[in-house]
Length: 97
Image (cartoon, one colour):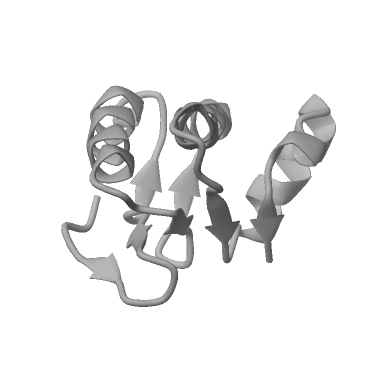
């Protein structure tokens, strides 16, 4: 996970890898950023992912909603968007490609 928040909508970067092996650490780091006021994640750096990435993105979105905040997922890789569609969770993600 990148430590830098983007000035646009206070987004943080996803990092290059979000797989089963890194999901727990990524989840915790993202939850900390959301608690600090982050309003989204930029997935542009994401090149390695599996279905764990979807679980993390959905958990971040739920955490923001629990705080009464919107959470935006931007630059979702096409492969991850296809995976979300295959699992039927694409409509749950507020993602922009």
